[in-house]
Image 1 (tube, chains in turn blue, cyan):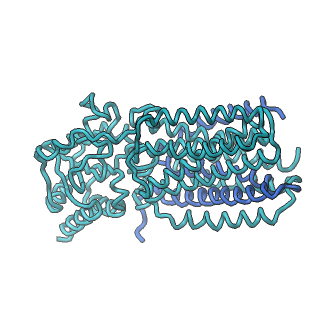
Image 2: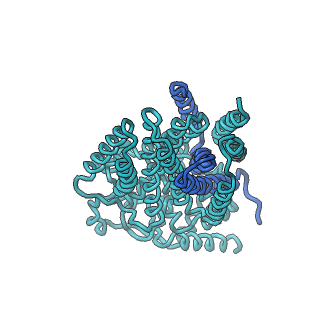
Image 3: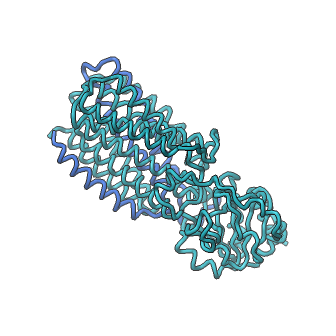
Length: 97
Length: 456
């Protein structure tokens, strides 16, 4: 494994994150937080790897199962509510229902 | 290169694009879709990996998670968005901590991998309990006032040192499972102790910081599993949470350490002198008459608007005033509410067009030319003491210059002090009118008054 390479990736991604987030309008800070919160549920990848392994122990399977459930909860609700929030941001006078 | 590596690479690009498109409202929804597709590719790529052979439990777990996540997103009222974010964060961090634990019991790794796992587990469990505590405080199941005791910072710091030491020992002797259990216990306890002294008004900073921790935990997992996609996504989330909490700190003119260890909002000085000074109050009829005659009105919402669920009534007020030719805008303070951007989401929910929501720095120069500043459920963010009184706990905090407006109207239940526990001199200024009552009820009587005169 090449840790040094990993640190380079981390450093570049962190700087990129800083630059991208700085540009986000304060108007969207709440949806931004739900979005990054949803992106952090990428841990579902690790959870699947743990629980899907060929000769995983019972402990791994149980922990992996709970991890997949909670990561998916975070993932699904994070993306759905971000979209729900953004749907409400409208520029023009809203049409009367 | 395996197919999953290609999919991971595309997913990483999509995550970056998601954040890039998030910067403006016009492209933000594209950003969400990009993030969703990225996540889908990451999951598919992982399921295709040859290490993954047992699908049935994964599929069941994915379905259970979806079954919990969908109602959590769809049924939550918009006023509960801070709580939802906290609980969702707790789930994500918990997943990450459990994966770290499973990985530990699988390999008992030495050296670098164990160090990465320790960080993942520490941040994961800590963020889990801290987010649950934040949820409790935001949902008012727990008292939102900070709870302090003597030597609190000493205890927290000591606990951190112990956790770091145990983490260090585990890197050398990973087979010591007893010590590992203690490590997990300390991480869980640390999360609770960290949030106990945090008050409600500091939640925007803390929620953002916890978001950052959850990301860094996923990032550490990336190092432990040698997975670049996890490193990238975790780093993006980590830096995003971090920069947001810096923005929040700056908006309160406070440092990180002060927010985390300062236990703000328990100072209760000068409350006794409140009753002596005279205030002018007005009825809905009088206030409506002033609003009708105004040319420009700036509404300043605060957490009180969220509590009273007054955002829809305020939109109605905006509509009737605009119909009469009054220019109505909304001034948004960066830390108004309980999470970054809280007010914007509530007003957007009530169909207020977002180009009417003006940031502090842009609206402040114009408040001097504004006829009426209508303050709904905000207090400290308009308190001139932040500028005039160097001894005030909020001294130096940037505020919305509501006091410059020709008339200041403040809708408030009573004369109680704001979150910082300090009196607001704005209430006693000669051009201030206090409108006593529940925000929602008061605004709806204003709407009734104004629309009655339209038809007359």
